[in-house]
Length: 479
Ligand SMILES: Cc1cc2nc3c(=O)[nH]c(=O)nc-3n(C[C@H](O)[C@H](O)[C@H](O)COP(=O)(O)OP(=O)(O)OC[C@H]3O[C@@H](n4cnc5c(N)ncnc54)[C@H](O)[C@@H]3O)c2cc1C
Ligand code: FES
Ligand code: FES
Image (cartoon, rainbow, N blue to C red; front, side, top):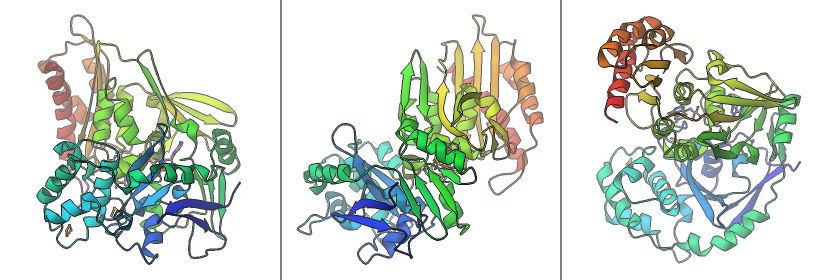
């Protein structure tokens, strides 16, 4: 296994040897690294926890179509090894060799899209990721792209208008002209697995699944990560030294997707943005949940495996996966096991995983036309917020609209994602009509003893939990 990382920055391959560069650790964030360089002070630290977007940079890597894929990410959540084999692009790289501003920068300046300028590099980089991905100039698409970027003084109108102007008139930029050369440089960087060691830390970055499973079995105490959006906060907020990390984000087998006969199976390394696209047609409730998940920068990093693995009571995927009756495949060196989503979360931040196992993939079974699924997330604001209450519902209706196999799963109501079993039993065998649903609401409230916290009071949670079932009913009537 190699022990250095290589990536492209400022037109040159940069090599970091952690055993020699003592000021850098494998868990040094890309933000910290860039701020220490003389020519990259455009990247800013606002919150250091993925909430403000001031630290946004873009990562480019070769795609399957012979081009490059560009993704805006929060550099405050990115450990240095995640740069291996990629191009790191900061706001300083956008102007061309003659010193001309990138069209996005030029229009933003001309349209008065910047005042104090603290947020501007992050906003430009989010828009640059959007520009290079060929996404549309529709207002809601641009708003979604900027959902992870706060601006305190300009006001968003001129920013949105300048983005629309540039994106409706996309020309090639110097990155397009250099694409072939960039691909060749990135493809020449070895994709071998890495072991990065310092005196206090070891960071494994395996390329293949069998290596990952061996590492998991040999070092069960090491922290397994994928996108690291949860794990990075332990470093940036709690200032923990993580002594051993196994990073599964380069394992291709964990990104595999198979769709057949109405079923969908995807690897645990699939990101939330990828899941959003994959489920749009056949599992719209899942896609809808992904849309309100964090911001685009977070969704580019955060994975399905990380969301389920963290077993957070307010994780967005668990309620809707319960409603879809998802099956989780877990794997160790000793083989595979399938666990129903219903049995996967066993306690507060605990799962049915054994110490040597990883989440390999998730399967969403075929949804028959007689089955209705809905997913809802209530939070203080629509974008980039964690759920106060979330819910995933499923009812199967026979020809007489009689409910069978009801699932009413909730996040934010207890220490674990939980089902309102009494309410489900009451609804099963009854007609799917408003009156029955209203009779169910007290049973939902009785099923939980939610807490009051900074996000809401317990009473609010109880009322909302019931109202969400009513909303689900009304939504099924509007189809
Ligand atoms: C600003 C911000 C906004 C966020 N918004 C949301 C949101 O809207 N909704 C939401 O649900 N979450 C949100 N999160 C939390 C987090 O992004 C998600 O839980 C995400 O899906 C975690 O994925 P990851 O790959 O980054 O996990 P990581 O941080 O890499 O890992 C998280 C946990 O999962 C375990 N794990 C990772 N991969 C596997 C695997 N293959 N097998 C077994 N265990 C594994 C790890 O050991 C670790 O304990 C947010 C986080 C931040 C910082
Ligand atoms: S510093 Fe705020 S998102 Fe990174
Ligand atoms: S221009 Fe001041 S924060 Fe955006």
